[in-house]
Image (cartoon, rainbow, N blue to C red; front, side, top):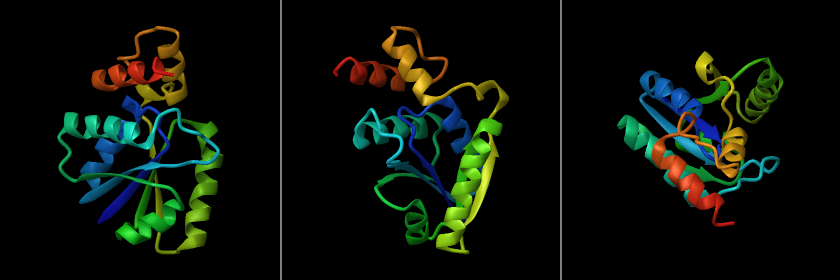
Length: 161
């Protein structure tokens, strides 16, 4: 079965990677999508996000993960790729309402799509892309939250602007 894991991660964190690795164990193929969320403008270019995502795929040696980007409906992308499941990560109660609304929206587009919510590892619940960016901008170490190669790319990108 094919699953889709869309994320607006900018940058992708260990939390995103944890969900991806667990999903890759369950599904035959996982499309990890650098999705464009109009309400969450990305700090990084799509190519930069794809490069950072690829670093995690390489690090974990995930042979069944495909990296891609898409500007448009995640549900339409899933259907075009033959994915029957959209994976979402949830850190806590604060994420529930958003995830529930997204799941209803996906179902409204196609009843062939199921949403699978995977709970974040308790050690990673407090990790977010925005927190990582903020710490990096303040000159703090972020390697506890992102892959070392991603931390280097993050610092390079942030100090370019």
